[in-house]
Image (cartoon, rainbow, N blue to C red; front, top):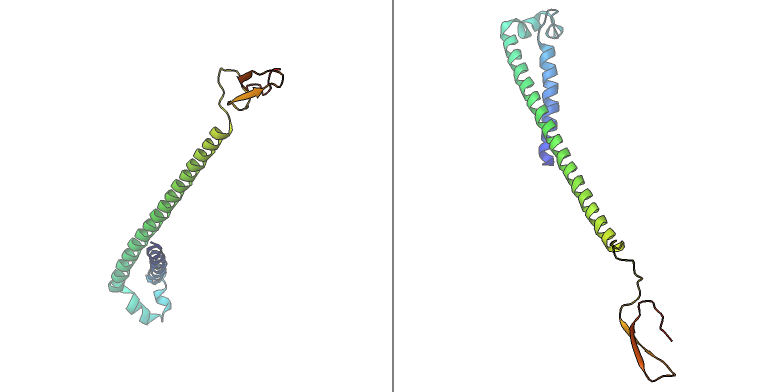
Length: 146
């Protein structure tokens, strides 16, 4: 695709230069640039209806090619901009999803139930040295009763 863009740009510049040259060669009211190429001999070559007809056709062809290359280059440039904008939007969405997942993992969810501490929820066995009984109680507060 880069090769096509480069060839289009080269063709565009070349047609632009040819178009300028062909327009300047046409004889206008003041004689144009055709009279500058040797005076009387130039008017025979570049002047009259025959040469004007060729130059008029060359101008029309160059103008049409110039317009087509201009429109093509503009379209290809804007399509690259749309693709770039789509990629940027996709990256923003991915970053937003990653940020949402991180927030879900880091922040606890709030509910109507009272907040609890992060103490272990496994049951522990506490042995009292003075008595022979074993007390099995969940360690919700982290301390054992005497």
